[in-house]
Structures are given as C-alpha cells and as structure tokens.
Image (spheres, rainbow, N blue to C red):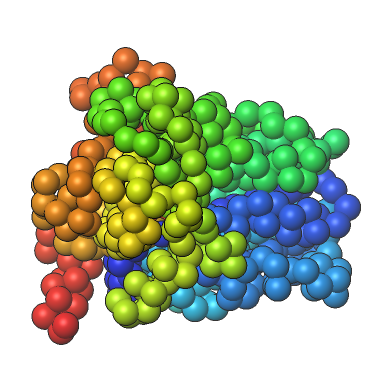
Length: 485
Ligand SMILES: O=P(O)(O)OC[C@H]1O[C@H](OP(=O)(O)OP(=O)(O)O)[C@H](O)[C@@H]1O
Ligand SMILES: NC(=O)CC[C@H](N)C(=O)O
Ligand code: SF4
Ligand SMILES: [Mg+2]
C-alpha cells in the first residue's frame, strides 16, 4: 500500500518539472540550468541522472536545485552526453529521498531512469498486482510502477515494453526517460501535463516549460503531442503514436497559476492568457474603485489585464519579500498565517484612504485572501473588493498537483457570498468558466467535449480515478485518517 495520503497538506502546491538533454558535452550542467528555470514547479527535492555510454550516474537530494547542483564536483561526477533531471513536489509517496526522481533500475534491457510530472491515478492498484507477481518496490512513488511494468512486460523491445507499460496507466504523465538505448519522452493521451521539445545545436531537449529552453539558449521546436512518444537514439529522432487519437484535455490551471508567465504553454503565452483572464474578469465583474492591486506573484498579469480593461490605475499596493518561496508551507495553522504576513506587506503610503480591487489568480484554502484583505484594511483602505482570475476551486486534483483534500477547499462548502464573508471583503467575484475559456481563445467551454481539463473547477475528471473511487484502499486510508484526527 502507498504509505502517504496525497492530500496530507492543505495548500495548493506546485507540481513537478522535468528536463532532459541528449547529445551534448557536460549534459548534467545543462540539466542543472534547466531545472533552475523549472524550480517554481517543485521545491521539495531535485535530482539528475546521466549516462556516459557505459554507466549511469545519479545525484538526488532534498531541497532546491541551487545548493544541490551548484558545486563543480557534483556536476563533474554526473558524466556523460545525456542526462535527465527532475524537481519534485510529491503527489503520491512521502517527501523522502527514496521518492526523489529520477528513479532508476537496471532492467534486462540495461539501465532505465525516469523523471515524471503528473500522477498515475491507478498506481496503487497496479502496485498491488505487481507486488503479488513478485515485484520489489524501492519507493512509495506512483512513478515507480512504470519501471516495474516495463521490467515485467512480455514484449521484446524496450520501446514495445514501454508502450505496453503506458497502456496500463491511468491519469497524467509527462515522462522523460534515460536508457542505455537512448532518451525517451512521452506524454499521456490527453496531454494533461505539458512537455516541450527544443534543440541546442545538435542536442535534443525535453522540458516541462519553454522557459527552461530559453534559459539554456535552446530553440523551441514544438510541444510533444498528447499520446506521443519521442525516441532520441544515436542523434536520430523518432516519433511513435501508439494511442487512438482522442480530444486533448490540457490542464487549464497551468495557464492560471502553475507555469511561469514567460513560458509558451500549449501553444499560448502564459502571460498573455493571464492578462486576457484579467480583462474578462473586468468585463464580467467590474466595480468602481481607486486602484487595481495584484496579489503577488501570480496575480500580477491578471491585474494588469483588469486595469487595462477597466481604466482603473494599476499600482503595487502589496510588496512581496523575495526571500520567501513561492508557496510558504508550514505544518501548523499558526505558522502558516505568520508566513503569509512574512511574504506580503501592504504599501501603506499608497493604500491609505483608497478603495481597492485586489486581483489574485485563485482562492484555495482562503488563507492568503483573508490575510491580505485585513492587511488592506489595516493600511487604511476604505473599500476592499476581491476579484479572482479563475472559477471557484471546488475539487481536488489527481493529476500531479498537490491540492488540499476537498473539504479544505474554501469553495467546496461555501458559496461566493459566504466566501466573501469569510475573507472579510466588501465584494468577491470569480471569472466564469466560459470567461476563462474565452481568454484561451475559445468561444466557450464545450460541455460535451471540454477543450481542457478543468476538473478542479467543474468536477469533470477526464480519466478514471481507480485509486480514488469510493471503497478503494486510498478512500479507506482517508476515512481512517479522518477518524484518527
Ligand atoms: O487560498 P490559499 O490557500 O491561500 O491559496 C491561494 C494562493 O496560493 C497561491 O499563491 P502562492 O503563495 O502559492 O504563490 P505565488 O507567489 O506564485 O502567487 C495563489 O496564487 C493564491 O495567492
Ligand atoms: N507533482 C508531480 O508531478 C509529482 C510526480 C510524482 N507523482 C511524485 O509524486 O513524485
Ligand atoms: S484537476 Fe485542475 S489542476 Fe488538476 S490537471 Fe485538471 S485542471 Fe489541472
Ligand atoms: Mg499567490
């Protein structure tokens, strides 16, 4: 049984980032740079595995890329012309060294290392079957099931074994694998998580976001397509599409919050989409006020869009400390509340005597909004209106984002008026689901064939959720956890 509950924590957290490069000198040094650019996607742990043609070399550690991969001797020991790397925020399996990726095993075909962004929603069931058949797992991560499925597949070639493994997975995955036969990148058939391909001279790169290509000076080539497997071997690139074509369901929250604004994700500039969401928000839920103020960091582009559309001046009424991470997570409520204060502070001289519209990208638990509304009042704001650049987050994610349990999501038990009262604002409004789709260039959400995964807003999950169905082991685990509290 998987030993931890994916919803142990209570804050919306980032997900993982993957990066791989084949055919370059000092591949691991390039991977370290790429992982730096993806640090916002996972801050729990980082790892790099390289291959020098004979041997695999690996360094995995808890914590950030800087601090773990900024020493020459570590990079020099990761020898080889190919390497993959990972920054982790756990979704399945505890935060411990044994779950830090890339995961590695020696298979009959040779070494096999895997870096994964996403979450396999039937990993627990697969693991049970594999263990019954004799597999010995080294970690509690969902990602390890892939290694065992490849190892035990009856097909003869590595690629066929890999395809056989993928066909048994449910959920979301963007994989970059390093094998003695070359590098393999793969995206799940719905393309829930992002993965792009780039070139740096003769080297081929795969990365979660295009910003990682920019940072290493590589050229963006294209996204890996949903359901596509790309194999890089001896300098040649081969694409395989083993799944029946199906309409994609890219994660809409990547546009709202996860990705860096300077990334091109799913063919669109994240910054432009966020500005467009802000403009939609102003059209749908405009209100008179003196100032539009973003909640840094990820509320900034939407606030610019809102200000431009409404004609109300944009001002930096909240200043954030750059020495507090993206998500300030602490084990107790008391410390968490202090954390929000440490991260954000009111620009009092600007706020005093003004009515303000605060723009944030999302409300998850409500901790940030509640603190910031109070902060504005303490700074002398006459009115505080909150506008949110996504619909209410009512459902948990099972696809690689570590959302709180459903009952800890403010919107799961409160309507908008109750949420407004909870955070203490004078008014609160969210962009509509169609407004969000319009910002992405669609006329509206197609309810019959939705263009994106938006399950955290709509509850419409695009894949089966075997491990999370009522009566499954993880359901029992959650119930047990609830009784133990
Ligand atoms: O309702 P809550 O539970 O407080 O969560 C919502 C907040 O969390 C995120 O910010 P975060 O601080 O994680 O990162 P950011 O600096 O990128 O905005 C998000 O942008 C909201 O501000
Ligand atoms: N957030 C992610 O993409 C995590 C990848 C994998 N499911 C893990 O828990 O390590
Ligand atoms: S449930 Fe939400 S966060 Fe998870 S993949 Fe779907 S849209 Fe993204
Ligand atoms: Mg925020």
